[in-house]
Length: 256
Length: 267
Image (tube, rainbow over all chains, first blue to last red; front, side, top):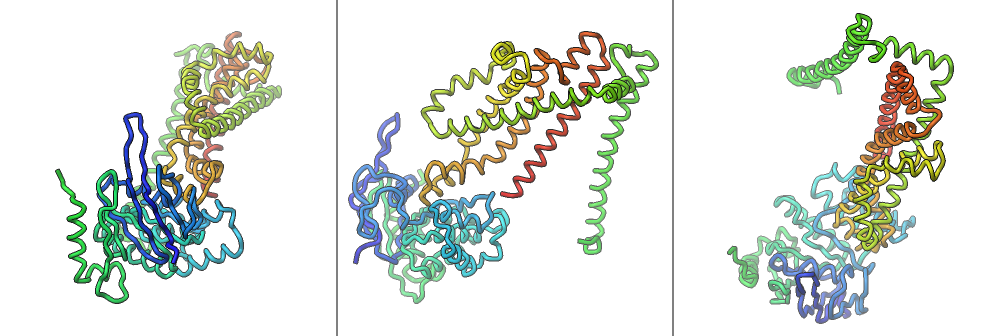
């Protein structure tokens, strides 16, 4: 089967007046359709750079990115990107926010609008469609941000620390929420996070990145002995602790 | 919500706020009345020379004289038109130039030192130049007003554009937005408060520009009345013009404020 995302020897160097910085080196991996893959690494290891390259916002210095078998240049409409903060536009209502992608891609058709209405109804935001983002809770805002991403019907979702702005309790709930929606919609997902527990609880496979320049240090398949796994349930699996310890060790984090 | 649903403390609290607000309004009005009364009394008791300091009574008399002979509206209309024109042109051109600067980094870098100098320069110094170029008339006056508000608008709005949240720009880029869409979907709407703010500043600046312009060259308008009144030692006329000016400036400022609320509501 053709992988949804495939990276071949991707590397990225940044140029600054002070010198050249190698952010990523020799990154190769592939993600199958419908998979949920996590990427963890210490801060500053180039996680966001990696997602930006996959999304096409950033050009790699070397190597190739394939999306469903085709080499990808520039922003690819098959990919939806969820950023660290929900970045809802405070001057637009929820409905208008969700419409953003369609407006930009000139896809405001009756069919797509009814698709959006369906998503809003299905995920409990229809009652808030005419509210402004400031009137919504953090979790609902995150949901709205996800629907905004789903509205343009991407096949692949990139999540860039998408939950880091939320407080811990909300975050656990939102993890479950977003995970369920992504699974229900049958999307492929690549999630970047520095939170080991979050990564294990959501991913089927995990890549551990090294310190800068980021390389893939380890690839771990997460197999948990629970049925109908959700992020919250996964945390209760007996293997959870072992995975956590193993990745913690690999990350090799020191305070000093 | 009716008072019945509130607790006693809440009702008392609301009453306190209400009475405080009322006393502020009363004090404001009193300040005005007392000021006028003292001025009038000082003038009629000859503590001050009413010929030089004028008085509320004399100002009212002057105003009604101007009103009756019909010249009031000519002067007010002239100045008002010049100000509104200068204000609108200055703001529109300022925002437009800011958009151009935003669209090209190189361009804005090249122009930066010129903008800084142009901002520091007292634009009124260019008044005589405009008069020679554009003739001794309203066109030169409007240009002075425009120039005064233009550079400030450019700098302020451009800074606002630059402060647009990067994440929001990344977001629309990831949705495939081009440069024009980034401008219309993100940069302009998120800079709306900045634009509104510069609009408010520009109201004041345009008045300065027009009055100074009229000082330099004019046959009608409130600035003309002020200069004329000063030259023939009719301080009543000067004061009356200042009163009308402050009224007009206040009305225009509140007009902008109402506009802001209207547009903000539509977002």
